Length: 324
Image 1 (cartoon, helix red, strand yellow):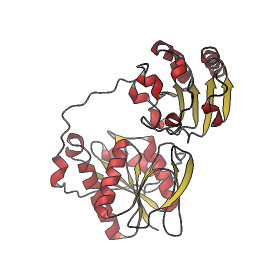
Image 2 (cartoon, one colour):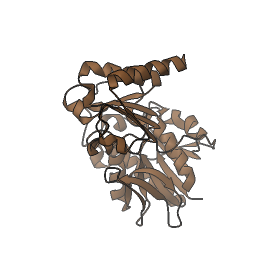
Image 3 (tube, helix red, strand yellow):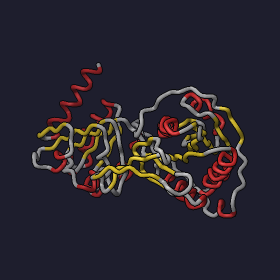
Image 4 (cartoon, helix red, strand yellow):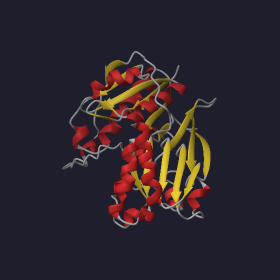
C-alpha cells in the first residue's frame, strides 16, 4: 500500500488537532508516515501512533526555531526523497495554516509536483487522491486531482473528525541537510500571545462571532459570555475589527481567518460576501439579526430575527442552565 507523508504541527511535543485530522484522512488513501520536526519531535510519537501513523520520522535542530520556514521545507523534502526511494508515495499532507501553505508551496515547487490548497475533504481515486475544495467565496464545491508528480495537499482544520486507529508508530531518525537558504531569514524575537483560555479560532468546534450590530467594543462581552458558556472561540466580522472593537487576529472572512467549525453562531452580522467566504463551510450555521432581510439568512441552517442584546443573553443563560 502506498505511503502518505503527514507534516506534524506540534508545540514542544504536543500534537495539535489538525494533524490528527490529517492522519484520519491519510488512512483513506494509504499508510500515514508522520514527519515531526523541532523541539519535542520524538515526544509526538505516542499520539501519532494512536491515530494511525505507521512510522514517525523525527529531526531536531535549532534551525527550526531560529529561522523561518525553509529549514522545515528542507526536512520535508528529505522525508519525501527517503520515502519515495523506498516505495510508493501517494501524497504529502500539510495543515492549511499560513505557515503550512507556504511550506507546501515551496515543497511542491522543489519536487515538481502539483499542489491543492484548503481542501475540506479527501478520498481515494483511480488516478490518485481526490480533494474537495470550497471555492469562489464558498459559492461552489469542486473536486480536484493532481496530475503531475506526488500531490501536495493542504487541508483546512475541522475537515474531518479525529478517529483513533492504533498503529506501530515506529520512530526513525530523519537525515536532513539544510540548504544555504535555510538561514536566510532569522527570527529575532517572539512575543507570547495572551491566553484567553478559549480554543484557537481556526481549530474550534464552535465559533461565536459578532459584527457591526454589536455596536461597540464593550458589548463584545455579550459575545464572549455566550462563547464561554459553549466552550467556543470568539470571532468578529471585518466591520467590527475595522472599528477597533475586537483584535484582527479574531477576524473571520476573506481578509481574516477561514473557519469550518461544527457550529457557527453569527450575531449582528449582515452576511456580506467577504465574511461568508471565511465561514460558509461551517457544518451548522445560526444567525441572530434584527433585520429579517439580512443576506446572512440566505445561508443559515437556523435564523433568529431579533435584537442580539435580547437574544444572546437569554441563549447564554439557557446554555448555562442546561449544563448546570
